[in-house]
Length: 372
Image 1: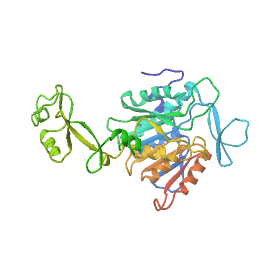
Image 2: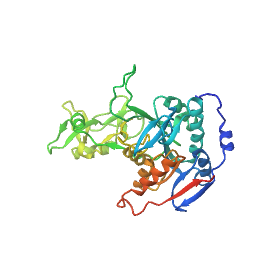
Image 3: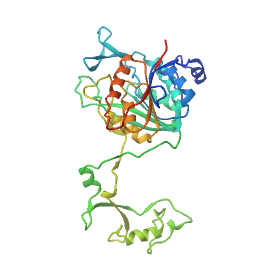
Image 4: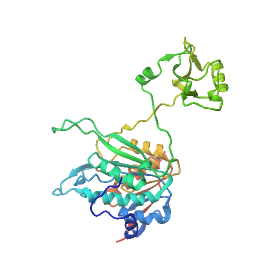
């Protein structure tokens, strides 16, 4: 499905008409990591020269089309009206079709920068997120959509309005191809999980559960459809493993036989790494942010670990206070951060300077600024 709105340009026009950013090196020439103080659209076009198809993970937390301004005052970040004199970190004044085209232009360049094994996570809110998903489907392909993640951002509120309370926002997760980097995230089992999922205890005191030895689907040929210990798989199913392996499991005491002679495989709690992460995440925003709409470092580390490997390149072209860059740095990834806000760059540089030396010997990055 293609979303239509006023002033929508073709991809060809977007790629050809936007000019490149002229960047000057302020410090750290030649470093792998880059912090760029510039307009992100023209900068993304510039980066295509050296980084097309080389970025392995993109996380962006763009404006949410709120039609507001955000400030920094007394080391606290807040929403601001234009009448207040505190320093404005950034303005979020594009709305409607103008906002959608603003975002689409950048997504087109981000797609070209993304490697074949790469993924993109776009953080947005519930008011505009469903329209943004249509843009993402158009740019990356509906078949490359992987998850619509609900992120619990705060504690419940008791605002007086005729609607349900809003404690979540949205993360849209897409990949460039069918085979992206994926390091399966696992969460520790709670005591309640252990009691519910691993109800049995063996003679050695180990908690376990059991699963069927067969799976859906018949095999016309092959050993998994053959008889084992005088038993054939139920109609329409086949053994999960070949009879020789089932025999070995049985010798090792890894198969439990029911009173009716039905075999099931034992799965032990102490051999499981944890439970699969689902699509509702609870990573709450910092209570006292140093920068407006600052996100949890744990959230960014989780994303970086799941969808990139050490040495991969991570990009955030709305880097704000630099949380994505800090997460990438601490996890051994290379990174590029872009932001047009003077306040964002100052906060990011301060945070980079405060990374504990125990994590690595030195934070090296090339700092570039747009000329003019």
